Amino acid sequence: MELNELLDKVKQGESETLELKKSTGQLERGMESLCGMLNSEGGSVVFGVTDDGNVVGQEVGDSTKREIASCIREFEPFPLLNIEYVGIPNTDKQLIVITTTSTDDKPFVYKGRPYMRVESTTATMPQARYHDLLDRSNRAVIQWERRTNQELTLSDLDEEEIKRTVRIGVEMGRLPEAAYRSDIPTVLTNLELMKDGRLTNAAAVLYLKHETMEYPQLLLRLARFQGTDNRVFLDNKQVCGNVFLMLEEAMAFFFRHLNLSGEVKGLYREERLTVPRDALRECVINALIHREYNTPGGSIGIAIFNDRIEIVNFGQIPQGVDYSSQNPPMISKPNNPIIARSFFYRGTFENWGRGLGLMKSKCLEAGLPEPEITSQNGNVIVVFRFDKMLNGQPIESRGILNGQLNGQLNGQLNGQLNESQRETLEYIRVNEGCNTTAIAKGLGKPFRTIDKHINTLLQFGLIERHGSKRTGGYYVK
Image 1 (cartoon, rainbow, N blue to C red):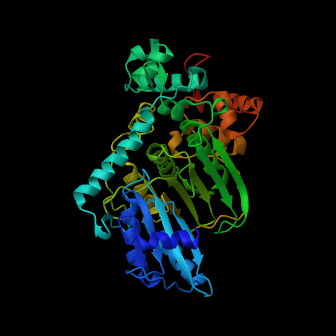
Image 2 (cartoon, rainbow, N blue to C red):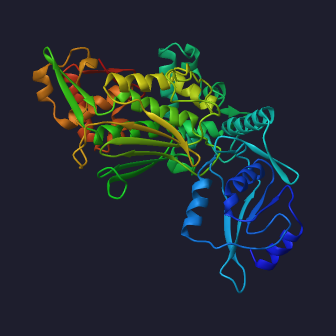
Image 3 (cartoon, one colour):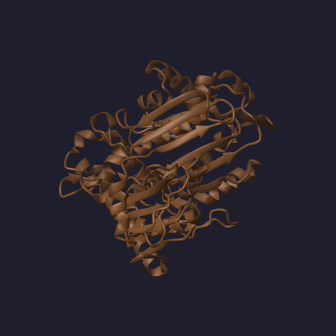
């Protein structure tokens, strides 16, 4: 912004869209005013101008810029702001202008409190108005999954994945047997994924074959870092695809890079991941269900360090919810109820708000701290910490051969399977009903190799096949 343009704006005086502050000594009050503008139609806060319009400016150093950046991080959700430093001729002073435009991400809070603009003043937002803005925002999020996409066609969807949802849903008694006999358009219509012959965004999130159409929301970032910071990558991968593919890839990544610990109980050796598999899986499922898909940017990120796992999801913690309490909230209101419903039919989401409690209990049973859940810069971050250090190098998954296999594996058999065969066995346990093609794709191994592993597992009586040759899959006995 040019100085003359800014001075003309200042001459008009304070208003609903302009706030003047003498210096960043009033930074807190300025941020509160900016929050009020974010919750309205936008505006600017100018530092270096007195209330009566006298331009005084201020010296701006690195410490001033760091202070401003620190305050901006206190907003939730994280705002898109434009910060300008406008020099005053013949001085070493500057004017600081922070501007925002109108956004659909309302309501915003600053340090946990919402603000509003009333003409040229800033006030704390009444609770009724805050909840009204929150309801509107939630409706906008939910409506996105219901919107139709005229460019999306049935050929863009993974038909086998749709059939798998139907098969599992019928077997679990969550879908009527008539669904078996229905064609794909009828199934999608009944699942609220097709409306008046047009497919919805939810259909893409659940069943899109990514190579046919670009949906920037459908991105999963996976990273294994050396040590406890993010300076050196040991493995770095991006997955683009539907939510079921992302879940498979996330779990395969955990088994590839987390240590296994073991304990002999009687004739059997129980082996466990560094962080309980069930807790990690529940966290990823919750991220996929609660993700704010209406915003194209952002992604789900999973980072494994030597002392922790961080799972980052684009979204925000519901206002007033305290995840650090002894009794975690039983929240059963996912941002995307239609998407969540398909997870329910697949048996991966119970729709009872039990995810937080499950994550905590599994970690405590394993002797680990409860997961830490925070909100920062428009993201929800879940951190699983563990005491035992990894060895600083990528560790190939050895799978899990433990009591969950109903005692079928004894010490002798445990030694007969190689690491790749055990990884295949664990993949089948995590992804019940998968076929050879899906396993090969999920583990990144040749089809022939997986086919040989499956024959070995069948010979040992560890797995069995259900269903027809075309649509059936493998299950752990």
